[in-house]
Length: 309
Length: 222
Ligand code: SF4
Ligand code: SF4
Image 1 (cartoon, rainbow over the protein chains, first blue to last red):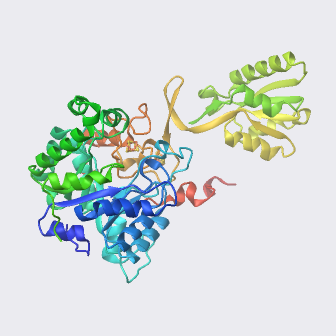
Image 2 (cartoon, chains in turn orange, cyan; image 1 turned 60 degrees about the horizontal axis):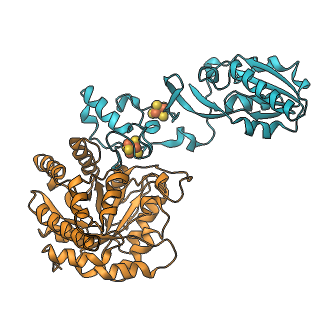
Image 3 (tube, each protein chain N blue to C red; image 1 turned 120 degrees about the horizontal axis):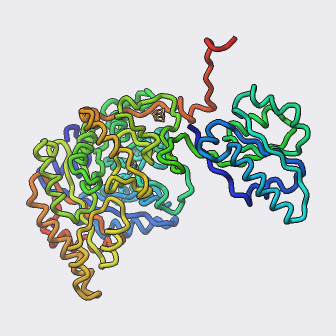
């Protein structure tokens, strides 16, 4: 994890604690208070708050504006940035802008293809990919240089993160190799895709640890509680790159409708308990999609509360 | 080769209905191979237009031809003597050929009769798939002979993304994930060490981003 930044998440990890992050999705309108409200719900229970960048290619308030708002609330934002919509000029410009407001965490992503979203007929950019974005942030931070060669004094102090999906594929070794590539580019932490298939995840972590890669990249395990059996089925069938085993669908579907949310939360907590025991794990990334109010309950029940300072 | 598909007949009717003397001009090059704009398709289109306009009670003069290549002046010049006999030309060549007709015969209205789609290969008869986007700086040597620009839906140079499932691209289940293919190919070639080395940002100036592209071969010019 080398280079030190003022990032609170990095400090907590360096102190040997399990880190806890979560994320909030911006609204599809100019209502700035939505983010403030969501951030307040989880503020005391997490070390960092990701703001998604037009997730699933649906146009929303930009991640940067929301991160500035969260920073101004005295909290710790994680700027998610996809390369789908902006070229290297715009990406670097936004990184400088974020840093100018004291934002110290970035999650570098390629982004979903726009065909998923509400502007399927848009052109895409993909001037860089996630690995190249990681290397770009690192260069800006460590060398004070832009891709175009311009050198500057005040550098962005970014703790650099990336996503990883042990379940895409089907080749787990390929997925570790891809994270190794991100590590070679300069990534310091990763938040994984939502974990439901524990066997695959354990296999992934074993290769990580065997390669010593868990020391270079802090793995925060991705947890998303299921709200009901409909969501479980949707994730299983419709969301690319998510692996929901039949047992999970059966378990959520096996209780009466009004108990399914509770069962989903229970499952999430059990998952955290189990993952805590997996060698190499450095923390959790809890993505409660449009269900942020449940994050405190999960964090408390999983024994991750209170958060270190 | 360039791949194209014929435009729907309704669209072509809409374009040509106000013109009386039409030339349907095919091309014996790429569009013949992909069966979109060769002499055979010229005949089919001309017959369909004649039938439509006869049934609609309008009489039109519709002639047929196909040139060796519409993207070469030498072949296009063969139309010089006859072109004034037509009000409009429907070119079944690719967009390059259709524009070249318009370039040479500036007073003629030229309509595209096909949708020019991509540079691709014939997987099977009637099944064409894109293989190259003409980026101008070929990197196939580094990627096991599989093009990440044309065959990854996000033109990633360090794939695969997290959306590939069972070896298929997140965009559609009938698109093999280009990066899964690259990984497997590198493995077969014993070059997996390449896979973990980050590839630096591409210089897109030789791609469409650098403006209209041209090649000047001094050695070929007289
Ligand atoms: S790397 Fe460029 S030139 Fe080579 S196949 Fe791909 S798009 Fe074509
Ligand atoms: S699934 Fe594969 S081909 Fe599709 S965008 Fe991702 S890496 Fe590219």
